[in-house]
Image 1 (spheres, each protein chain N blue to C red):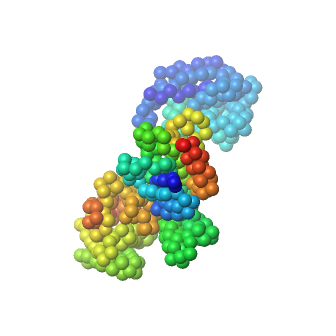
Image 2: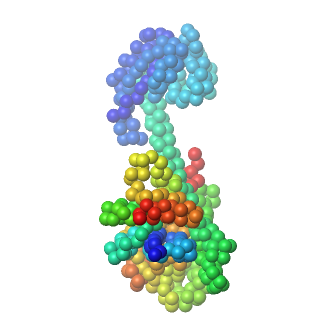
Image 3: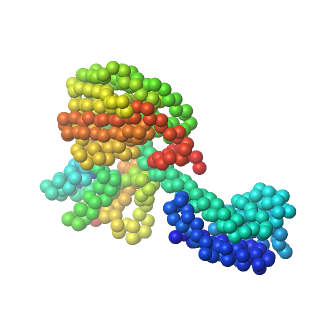
Length: 393
Length: 130
């Protein structure tokens, strides 16, 4: 059970006592935290005393009379605002001074109750304030968590950009100081590595922009009928030059048009990532099979390659941000470590998921399942998301 | 006789560049890209110095490799290099003795490593060896 501290500020002892008596046995149920709150009441008999109390130990909720001997309630509020203290305040005011209540609300009061009030009216106002308080705290906690996730993401991102940059600089320094000897071919190799690392950085930046756009809500999601078969054909066109260079056969099988409600760009991102991986991590003269299917509710996209495959422990972490499987089979392949995490995020957004089954040195099958008529939530609704780069806070 | 340096880093370009630079300075180089491979090789041969990156196949595999070396053969000097400063939230500035005690390395260098600095550090540690 949560204990909320209430400070009642009133120069009439009778009024303070009434509040004390009403709130002492009072408990509110707070669905926001699936719990209850009870109240501990402290008193102050003037605005000055209240400010001193608050400086010592700020309460959670303040019940504040307006018309008092020294400072008025509104003056107390203004002083608190000057001190940048945010205390949830319920003004206590006589009917005649409704205007005061309005002014108090402008000065930052959350609510007001009119004198004379019944214990029930007081409890109602306190219940409302408690709910607001808990919501506010939850929201702050969530925002702090978002900032932490974002900080972590950007830190790792910085690392992921610095590493290839350091590699490129290293080679350039060697080229500049002619450290590689007399053979031009040795320099060519260094240049090739620079280009490869630069390509990896470019891909990272591209994926990053895709993720940011997706999570920011800046780009309006245009939901329309999308033929996944067309998206797949277009993704195949994109990877075809690279596939031909390495004599990799591409095959697409679909039962006909596969339509679903989606944003065409997002479906394209999924297919582009899956197909470019299937080609990149394939062997020379291998093949890539794309199979589309599903039922009334779902669309399935299965992409099978004949590539290097994955060990089970690698497969388990493959869909996390910045995970790249590093070994002697992958170090010549540029990648960002974001492609599959992006696929996963999108699949989940369309009410589905992505899975991989794989055998080392035989190949992998990535299967994406999407709801046919799922409406992804608008992106600014505060639903949980990791790595929200564009958190509005 | 030239010294043998074992370089452990998962970035193939860092390995290539280190190998070229160290060989040009007259060292023998054994380059491996995982902590696992390093351990296996250490059973068969004893390098004069180990140059280890912190982030290998696991984010802290360099750590455990250093630990392993210092337990099995504490006389081998170990230099740890890392680009991790604030990445992944791990702050990696071993400023106090207590922090340094946790890192089982004789020396800690930040990436990108200036080769002259690295070589000075290596020479110091190798001289202490003798």
